[in-house]
Length: 156
Image 1 (cartoon, rainbow, N blue to C red):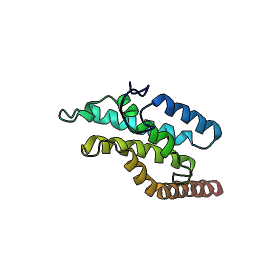
Image 2: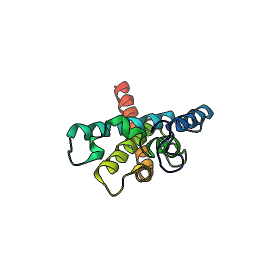
Image 3: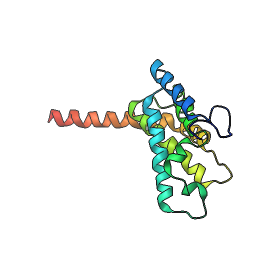
Image 4: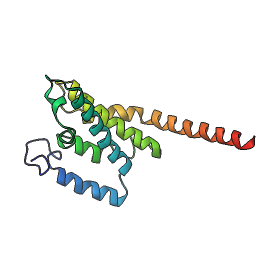
């Protein structure tokens, strides 16, 4: 039912099929980055798997399998339409992977550890939007230092 949208929820977050159609359109037109989308899902699946492996008996969100976390609530909607915003997301290629992975991790952490806030996707995106310039800066500095080391090594 979560895939087809036959469950109650906010507008846009119930039908995963409609979200996937939107993802195809965004990727085909070049508006969104597939790197960010994929890494959000990988980060979310990883963190959901970690919480499921820990085995918290009194937390129903931690007991859910990883694939249910990816289709529950606004996770798909946030990964496809909000995390890929070209203005506020990371701009470097490696930064897009890091940015998306951390959004997925943060969304599941907020969802599982805070029962008063069952949907953590928007908060995770807002938190990572704050860190997007820092991620890009660290990626650029890493590339500069790697190139300097390569130049020094080749000049010897």
